[in-house]
Image 1: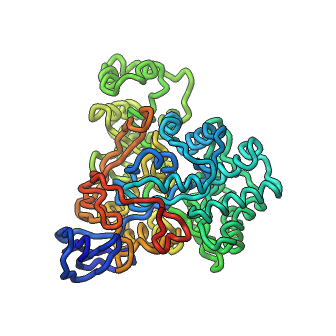
Image 2: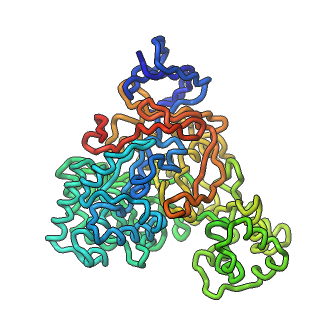
Image 3: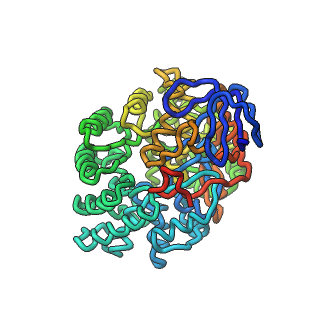
Amino acid sequence: MNDLVIRDALVVDGTGAPPRAADVAAADGRITEVGTVSGRARRTVDAGGAALTPGFVDVHTHYDGQATWDPVLAPSSLHGVTTAVMGNCGVGFAPAQPHRRDWLIGLMEGVEDIPGSALAEGIAWEWESFPEFLDALGRRAFTMDLGTQVPHGAVRAYVMGERGARNEPADAADIAAMKAIVKEGVAAGALGFSTSRTLTHKAIDGEYVPGTFAAEDELFGIGEALRELGRGVYELAPAGAAGEDVNAPAQEVAWMRRLSKAIGRPVSFALLQIDAVPELWRELLEMSASDAEAMLFPQVASRPFGMLICLDSLHAFGDHPSYVEMALLPRAERVARMRDPEMKARILAERPEQEDILAAMVRGFPERLFPLAERNPDYEPHPDTSVAARAAASGRDPMELLYDELLEDDGRNVLMMPLLNYSDFNLDAQREMLTHPRAVLGLGDGGAHCGFICDASLPTTMLSHWARDRSRGERLPVEHVVRMMTRDTARLYGLADRGVIAPGMRADLNLIDLDTVALRRPEVRYDLPAGGRRIVQRADGYLATFVRGVQTFADGEPTGELPGRLVRGGLAGRGGRS
């Protein structure tokens, strides 16, 4: 007898094959039949023609701290993710000497915008070494499976102390010690190693992430650990990724190609379109694929990368003196005061006593401010819908229009400010990236950038915008977008037991109404430990999510079931879990 049978589903199986009508059965956490299932089951679900996909595998998250206190792992779990990989960009919490815990929190807070107070209160420190960290995760249960990587920043500081934390050069002994720690971590089950080289990644004290300026002997020496073990991904945020140095990316890809060939392992790196050189991404994609012996996999996103603008987060008036005086009041009180015509005139006329660089950026680019609808917000907005364009059309000052928009819906309104991946005010470049054979969907950053970004909802953008709603250019077949989020991401990290609906594979599944699946407008919550702030984005259309055949979500709400566990590399292809 099967544990679960889902009948009358439109199966989008993750291979890229066209959708087909079928039943799917599962027992003991694995798929047993796909087709016409006649046997009995302990539970039968009538899909009613809804789409059935593999559970989504998100390879770029930062739940390193949240995983120690939160079994739900939202917002990623709200968007059909059933396996997540964390420990990206060279930051994490192991290995960790006791006296360096606060420093590691400051590193994560600065790089990934996760409130340090939430991390300090929420993390249950049960480890020092990386294998001990894996064991601590292995004792926990989640709504999804969770894998991790060994982060360069933590390793460098552990081995080199202040020299490592301050990015001083590593000598041969340092490199050997770092390699040994990475090898120990990957041998114990880490899915790879990560590092960061972009100048946009800084700790809370202003120092760059340890490893930012690492020389090739260090980068290649650590990579030898993966070669010797014959497994693991080498992941990085490369120099120039955010446009801070337009000459760096090509040089980075050149050494990454040599690295991949030297260690025989996949190298995956962040790839974004930058305004200063809007065609550079195409050159980097071609370089990634031009050497057949190198396994380079650029991570690309499905929408613009930027900031969310709202009254409870970043906005243009946050550093104006009259607003600063009321900034800590509850939102309802702030809205009431800001609606007063006298207060509005005063705030609009003021100039900051000490200018905030992000607020100044918002004020300086009203042509890049776009409202997000409460349901199914448009992440490919037309330039005519920007604050600047609408203000010009109505003869108003852009900042006055922005002021009014921030107060809409009792101060819950949200605007998007795209900074990358939107050079031509359309997503044509993103479509080309998403169809490149080497590109891997990533960069969702689930669990991170809590103050003004929420891109963990990228899977829903793929299903709604790219497969159904796009009106400003070509769409993508639903089987393509599903494959990118399932088989392709799973294979990159050696998770060969998931990502496809086929007998013997993991019964990680999403039942989705493709006609109604849609994002909701991002919302600010204060539900992290110590009352920490984060932005969460929910979705409609996810009818059910299953992990190992156990239902974890019903109509977007958690069921309370926690079948997810730590996934350990090496055993992952055979379903290795703690």
